[in-house]
Length: 88
Image (cartoon, rainbow, N blue to C red):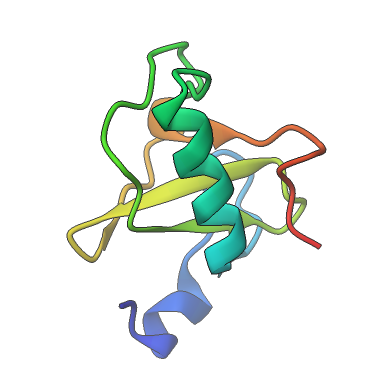
């Protein structure tokens, strides 16, 4: 997946807060929402491809997808998490 040393230095490009690896249950919930056509990124585009993994901002507000093992740390590609989707 992601090297642990790399994970220690990754931060949100929007506010520079730490990111952590999303747990499987969150990824599964997001994939169910995407399959139902209810999941959109920050610019309102639907998420069409299944998510393999992702990084969650420390405050739990954003999910950054990991595609082919590479974190996509673009603010527009981030997926806002509503309170029901936030980890914890």
